[in-house]
Image 1 (cartoon, one colour):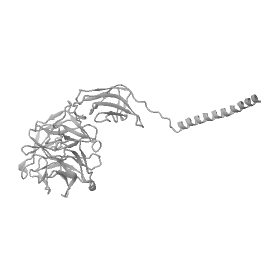
Image 2 (cartoon, rainbow, N blue to C red):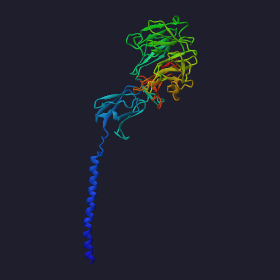
Image 3 (tube, rainbow, N blue to C red):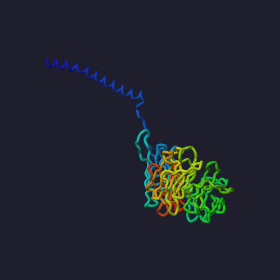
Length: 425
C-alpha cells in the first residue's frame, strides 16, 4: 500500500513541475520579447582608447594636445579639465595625427570622456604641466587682444601671447579702448592722452593722429585718474569721449572735427566708461564716473542716474571700467574696482530695469581702469584688471558664477605687467 501510494504521488508531481517550468519559460520569453519590442535594451558606446600627448615649452603658453593613434575622440563627449576652455574640442572630432591648442591653468590636466545620457565619465589621459609660478594657484595665457600702459607706452598683448610696445607713444598719461577704426585706415585705433594734454590716436602702424589739445577746449584735457570712452551716442558718429581737467564738462571728438560739448553734469565728470543700454529701456546711455568717482549714466534727454553700488576707488588711477553684457540679455553692466580693492559688476538698479551689482572680494585689484575681454578663449568675457601684487594682469573667470581668479601670462609664461594708473582696456 505504501509503495503503491508513493508511486501514485510521484506520477502526480510530474505534470505539476512541467507546468511550472512551462509557465516560467513563457514569462522569461515574454519579458525578453517585451523589452525588445519596447526598445528597452541598452547599447552604449565603450569608452574610447587613444594615445594622447601634450607638448610645449615648460612654463610657456604654447601647449598642443595631439592624437597619436587609437579611437577617434568625439569632441562633444570630451572635457579637458585643468585648461581655460574645458570644451576646447566641442563641435569637432580629434583623429590620429590631429592636435588642438590648450591653455593650461592648472598643474594637472585630465582628458575625460563622458558616457552619453549619464553622469559616468572615464579618464582617457592625464598630464602634468609646470606651474610658471608656484605662488599662483591658477593662470592662463592671453587669447584676446588687450591694451595697457607701462613705461609711458601703449603695450599690446596679442592673442598668441606676444607682447608688443607701440613705439609711437612715449608719454602715455591716459588710455581708452581700441575697438573702433576712427581714422578710416582699416585698423582699430587706440585713443590716449599724452602727458602734455594732447588727445591722440595710434595703432599698430605706429603712426599718430592728434584729435584735440588743450587749446581746443576751455582749460586743458584731463591727464590723470581718468579713462577715455569710445562709441556712438545720441546720434553722434564714432567718437572719443573725454573730460576736462576741471572735471565739469564731458566732450566728444573725432578726427578732423573740433571737440563737441556733450554735457556738464551737476555732479561733475572724471572718467568715461562707454556707451550701452544699462537700464534695459532699449536706448543706449553714456556711462561715466563723476567728480566723486560714482558711476552714473547719462540719458539722451540730459538726465543722469546712479548705477547701483557704483562707487569706484581712486588712488594712482581710478577704478572706472568698461561696459559688458555678461549674460547676453541686451542689458549692459560696468566692471569697476571699488575703494576696498574689490572688482565688481555694477549696473542700474534692478527696479529700474538694470542688473544690480555683483562684488568679487577675492580679486585684490589696483584702483585702475578694468575691462571685459575673452582672454582665455572660452567664448565668454572675463573681467581683466591690474592686481595689487607687482602690477600683474589678472582676470576673473566665470563671472557671476564661480568668480575664479587667474593670472594672465605671455607667450613665454611670464606674468603680464601693467600700470596701476592706466589699467587695461
